Structures are given as structure tokens and as C-alpha cells.
Length: 433
Ligand code: ADP
Ligand code: MG
Image (tube, rainbow, N blue to C red):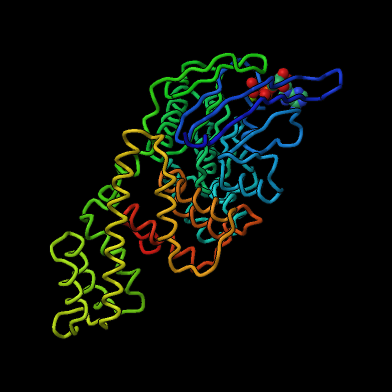
């Protein structure tokens, strides 16, 4: 069994403990939510739904009487302030019942704001925010203020904002509460899409039963207790998305071999001219498609450019050919892994991840601590399962150890990420993004 993304253990939570107004808001609550799941908390007003998501979202961490909130196996109460801040910034996106948009900021700046905390520069922030607005059909409102928008529109902005740092977990508190039925339906469609297409884990809070239609797991709450859990269909692998979308959906007009060849050519031929890269790419495409074997490939690579070769030194040609063989081999293994995952999403990936680590960090000369290794492996596994984006992957690798990351230098992060993305999607993130 893999670690659930969210796990609550025997939570007891009080408001106004010891005062006449004391409310025992959560009573012995234990539950688990799998990666890629779509869970709903369902129950009448006052049953503890919002309190529950404040705990899961890392907003309320101080006043829990007993119990633990584990995200990805990590106890939120064991995190430093900084670590908690990082979790809130990139680990979870919350769509609040009242939308919580900042009235003094434009729609665009509201969506871009969470990226500011990550230190992303303003141009890039706005560009990313525009993409998100476009996704929700809100481009033309970018420069307006929240008060100019209808409830449904504010809702969409709020969803866009929740997505702005690419969090694997999306929480929506009564997202339909303030919407008419058409907009409520749209919001549900968005959540479903985020779950099925983007592979996000969704938690939706609601008191209206009709809005449970897409949830796969439903937790029924009453007076602060989980009184029933209902599993709908067996979760159908949000994991599927990656393999389904593999290659062709990314770039429909390009064959897998050409896509990978292009990506690799840029990676391996840094510093060469456009003409040289093109020539190299042509041979590489043939090699990847199995049209030529390795010795022939090397011959082409080290033949002079004027004779139609790639004009590389023999040593270099061999080294590159070797790297390519490794890639092809790793790529095959990944395909096997995805076939397994499609049959059984719970397939452990541990061994695969360990093998992959050795290869991803091949050129890294330092020594990693156990904690660094654990975090690295976790990030690779999350990337395998498409739970985190390529960008998140690099963030985790790059963030300092104190900040919950692996603490690798930029060059190492880039090399590892390039290798991983090339075999996962055939697309080298650096080149195409
Ligand atoms: P729901 O979201 O299901 O309506 P809440 O989590 O908001 O439920 O509330 C659960 C219980 O805790 C209710 O009895 C509510 O009155 C109480 N409660 C919620 N927030 C506070 C607060 N800030 N101070 C005191 N009591 C609170
Ligand atoms: Mg509530």
C-alpha cells in the first residue's frame, strides 16, 4: 500500500476549550484519502466540515486536542513554521466558500499572488496567471476587480488562484453554496476535470447531496463525527492520465521518436549550432525508431559534418550513444511501470524509484543524507504518478533541507529533471516550456 496523501488519526478538536461556549467540533475523526482520489465531506451545517479542512489545509495547527494530520506521511504538527508555509504554498490549494479574493487587487493579481510568495518574478507570474484565467474562460476580466464580477465568475477566479502553484491537493469548501445551478454545474465539472485530467486529489465539502455526483469516496459527518464512509467505483487511476497523454497528446503532430529526439538533442548538444543540432536530431530520430543500430549511429555521429555526419569527436559520440542507450532502456522500464499501474494503481514503485535515483543523480558528486534520499525518492514517485508537476518536482529538489526540500544545487536539479522528464513524457521540460 502506498502512503495516503491525507491521513487523519483520532482527531479531537475543540473551540473555546473550557469556556461555556465550548464546542467539540471533531470527535475521534480518522480517515484516509488516497492520491488521485476525489473525496467529499458531506453533512449538515455545523457538523465540522470547515474545521476539518482547516486542519488538512494546514490553516489550523495549534489547537488540536489530540490526534495527527499526516500529509504524504508527514505530521503537520511536526513541521517548522517554514515547512508549513511551504506546504500551504505549494502543497494545497483551497477554494473558499466566500471566495476570499482580495478586493483591492485585480483578478489577474489575485490569481498571481500565491506565486509571489514563491519568489517567481512578476512577468512570469502574470503570464502563468493569464494561462489559468484562460482555462476558466476569464481572460477578459483580468484587469477587473472582484467586485465587478458575478458569483460564478468570482468562483472561477478562486479556482484559478487555488491552482496557481500547481498543488497536488485541491480543497473546495462548499464551492457551490453561492452559485446558481448553471454555475454550480460548471464548478463541479471543473473539479472533476482537475481530478481526472490533471490527476489532482480533490476534497469537496458540501451539504447538498446532488453535488456528490462525481465524488469517489464520501465521508458522512454528523456532530463532529464521521458516521459512515462510502466508496463509489474503484478509483480509476488518475495515474492513467500520464500514460494516456504520453507523447501524442502533448504534441499531436509529432511522432514519439521525433519528440524525444528533439528534446534530447537540445539537452545533449548544448552549445552547438542550430544546423549541428538538427543533423544530430535526424540521426537520433532514426536510432530511437530502431532504424539504425548503435554502431551505425556512432558512425554517423563522428563522421565530419561536411560529409553528412554530425561532426562529433569519437569520444563524445560514444558517450552520447551510451547515454541514449540508457535512456531507451529506462524508457522501456517506465512503460512497463505504467502498464502495471494501470492494472493496479497500488503497485509499489519503490524499486523502480531507487534504480531511477541512481541514474538521475549519476553526475552528482556529493553524498545525500537519508532524509535527502527519502525526499528525493518521494518526489520521483510523485512525479511517476503524475501527482506533482515538473515544476513542483524541481522546487522540491531545489528547496533547502530546512524548507522541506532536498537542497540540491541548481545544476543537479536541472540534470535530474531533464532526464526524468525526457523519459516520462518524451518532452524535455526546459526546452518546451
Ligand atoms: P460546518 O463547516 O460543517 O458547518 P464548522 O466546522 O464550521 O462546521 O463548525 C463545527 C462546529 O464548531 C459548530 O458547532 C460551530 O458552531 C463550531 N465553530 C466553528 N467555528 C468556530 C469558532 N471560530 N469559534 C467557536 N465555535 C466554532
Ligand atoms: Mg462550513
